[in-house]
Image 1: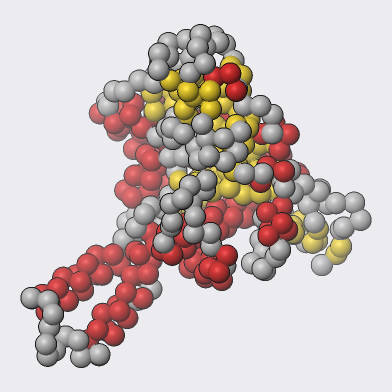
Image 2 (image 1 turned 90 degrees about the vertical axis):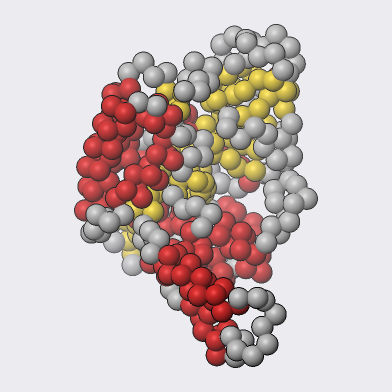
Length: 378
């Protein structure tokens, strides 16, 4: 098992010991079934896939491995408390809203010259909207419907769109504008960092990190499940392309295999685990980055930071450009961030998931507090 500065990922710990894995799966099945029951969903057929998604979430949790039973129990307690499930309908809603903003997709990847294709851009946008939907579903459930964040699919000016994802809140039957501007950031389940790039950390007061269990195939599995890919095959056949001169040898066999692939994709799971990892206020994110867990004392060629919070000025960071909790580095070595390595060239306000505020009741309180003079009865 690979250890990192005395730490190991919970996923590696579980997979490295059969007894731990059995304990993890038994606890997990109970926790996930409970989540599904809360959402009014049957998850029997998807349980193994949800367990696999949860294992991906466990990759972002680092542990000393001294008390595995306690670590496993704590993990599933957090999932029960801070997670929700997203369905095919949630994905459909996110896909349509994301598609409405297609003309705004930035083809250049953050801080690089790499160009992203439409499929990746659309998939990334869907993931972002799924995070917002997950947050709304979670807050509605956690407050028994007393507090319902309202999202906005309007095409706002970019500056307005960056300021807050929660534009309105229904609280105790009344519509209000919350006193704090809250932004929802979304990442994959194994993501370990809340990342607010460029100067986005100036726009909102609070940033919430939501992790969603989609993968690289989710968009195309979804398209297969709603019949979009079958339409491609139908168009091929109706256009007469399956007959006459064929530019490909064995093109008929290719059509048969294509149909088989689409059928397999239609059977893929469209139930996703979504985990509200926590939140951080703008003021703390805007301070100079402070590394909490790191290997600075032992580092010879580069320093790896496992935990910390604050802002870095660019993707290339040296030891003297940030502060360290505990032993100070002996040399001005290059700093990288586990498991990403380097961030892109732009400024980044960062917080590792272990340092996020976990008390989501506080978020409900902030959402329920209206801006002065803005409360109005529905």
